[in-house]
Amino acid sequence: MFATRAFFRSAAALALGASLGAAQAQGYPAKPISLIVPFSAGGGVDATARLLTAKLGELLKQPVVIENVAGAAGTIGTQKAARSPADGYTLLFAVASPLNVAPLVAPSAVRYDTFKDFVPIATVGTSPFVLIGKTALPARTAGELIQLAKAQPGKLNFGTDGVGTSLHVTAEMFKQRAGIDIVHVPYKSGPQVLTDVAGGQVDLAVLPLTLAQPFIKDGKVKAFGVTSLARSPSAPAIPALAETPELKGLEMDSWLGVLAPAGTPPAVIAAWVSALDATLKDPEIARKLGDVAVKPQLIAGPAFADYLAKERKTIAGVVQTAGIKAE
Image 1 (cartoon, rainbow, N blue to C red):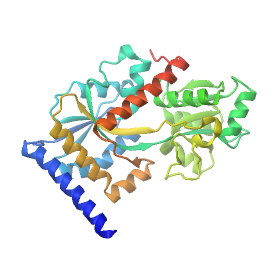
Image 2 (cartoon, one colour):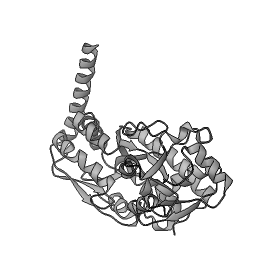
Image 3 (cartoon, helix red, strand yellow):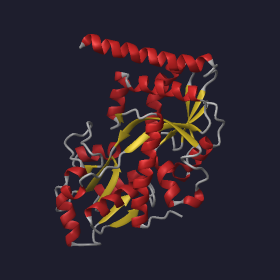
Image 4 (cartoon, rainbow, N blue to C red):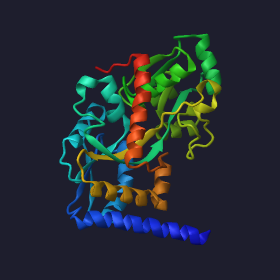
């Protein structure tokens, strides 16, 4: 067994060296690389990107520099990345909101095509959302919550970080799968929602697990379930919503990944896939990602493109049924 593991480690190292060597033989990278994060510095997406850049720079032999281009739910930075030269020196560190939600809920405000203007390189990980509620709610499980909502339609409410966001879409998916009527209360940010759930001003919320987890641990809010198919390794005591019979198969993870402008040379894409793969296999980086509730996961190339297409189809169905519009 040890010999087999050693063989695969050697094979992986050779593949990494070949991919990076092919790109570097063509002169890439010859200068620092800009990784656009389409959100403000200090947020969850930005923090995750910054966990990776030092190792990526070490492997690529050039600095990988975060460029925060915030605004309009991530669409401004995403548009900048789409219009950047396809030379491998400006890439996008992305999540679903600007790529697969905004084009559906605010199509007139989006100036790029996710599937024509970008080449998916690879995901770096996934992180679930979590359905939480105020402690005064007379329900302990997702099943009991569904029965409570059915007994008083339209009386419970839920907060998210705004109309047409990934959190809003996920909450609407929960509503549709559960067959319940609860009222959406849009906020400007997730932390505001969390504070009001803890204070009892709003009944429920769908939020990133990494944001809500400290309040869950301190007993300030109830956790009814995470939105991944399986329980999160960083919070194994919290059930998956999919464990509830009415919600079987419910899945809406928040993924994080890297994309390049369309037309980026294949050798550059291959070099980045190899560098990301090696970075995610670094034990210290994997540990740090786990600390922020991100499960390292590499989905590369065509498989990443298929993942995006499948996600778009799922989100489109939820958006159409709920009639979500953010413009």
